[in-house]
Image 1 (cartoon, helix red, strand yellow):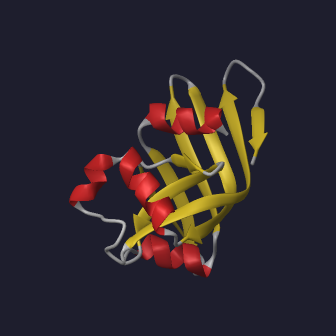
Image 2: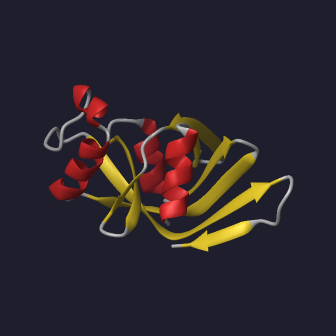
Image 3: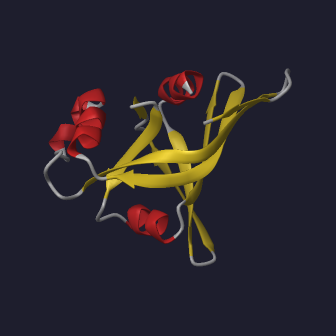
Length: 130
């Protein structure tokens, strides 16, 4: 999982796909953090992406850097503990201008039943399950 985290951090931006009814929705994200051995992302509870994840927790992520790309498929599970929110905000202190552990809006979610696959044009795919 550390390789997955490092790739997402090095890429800087990844794209998270959700579903709203029968319509796919994709948007850029930039947060990735490991807390208690799980890969987390962060969003705001007031955002449509949060509502979409709660309606259907199955998501996919994609990112590209230096001729390699990753696809992560899995389910997102909300972790409503203050410690989990604080860990993410400590990892991304610039978010504190918009979010707080105690604002009632900050939401962190971890991947469950996830499979990440690294691809390139020159090598065989490599899969990591977590």
